[in-house]
Image 1 (spheres, one colour):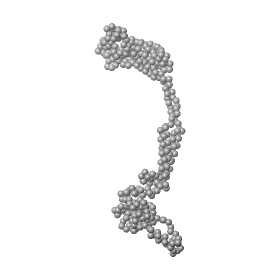
Image 2: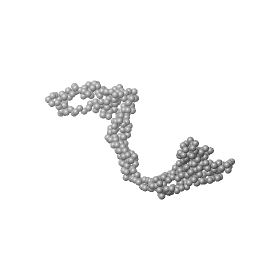
Image 3: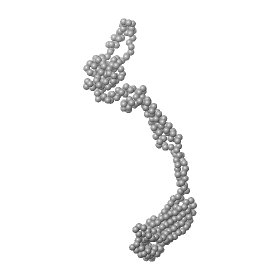
Image 4: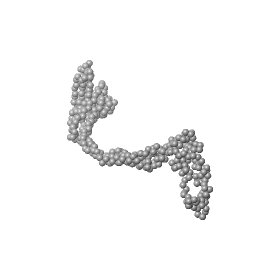
Length: 384
């Protein structure tokens, strides 16, 4: 496993890497199987659609013709959908309900004027006058009817009725528009009403008289739902990730990495404040004590309030305490590092020195000893 990971993570991976790798592979296979099941299992949705949609709506326009030559408006001009109409200038109001419906729809418009006497918020008298009730056929998708209100006549009637109801109750006037229709497929009724205000000088419809209704026939059908692509991508990505993690864990298992080196690195990081780098002469005349772990060497240094010297050439950790050297090395013993195997020297018959060609016995050995490096030299290892 890469040295980018902390040593403790690498140690855990080394100990349990095989089991974790197998678990990740199992998870990856499960994710792939689940993704396949999502694709193979197609759900069905119930969809309700609106068929044969038809809309019928009624709007109401108002208009009046100017009959007073002294009016502020042009004489005999037609005013439409005014916020206010003047009684003396335009004494007759035309109410025009217009219904938009499918071609050939049979439409009946009914326009009525209602007078109502109210006391203590309760109606104790009511009278309705039908202004028009007419049945037509929607031509070009439109049916229209006209109804008229003689406002002067209505005002006189209201005055007479108010006198009769004096000190009894209040009088209110409302305009009702009812549309009955039959499209052939659908039939229904639209209603709307609004107050009709009349004062000494003016009158107006105080509200909206429009109404609308939409018809449709619901049709239910079964459709095959598309798979959840977000879930599929998540499962596939999880599977690939599990396989990748499993591969990394398999490469970091205990039999594939140097566990001892990882443990040494943990100890090195833990006791770094007690360790200094340096060069240790290998032929110093001292007693050598080999310890089992780096932590043991650090304990000796702590007990003696000394430093641990780390020789990077020989991967050796040592504490020099008087005539004793306490050391730890994963590469072998002190003698193995100080006197590596440089090749066997052929020996002659018993009692004779090493065979040396035509020279005297032991001549080569003597030459070797004469050329041996100084044990106290710091460069003895390189000279050897």
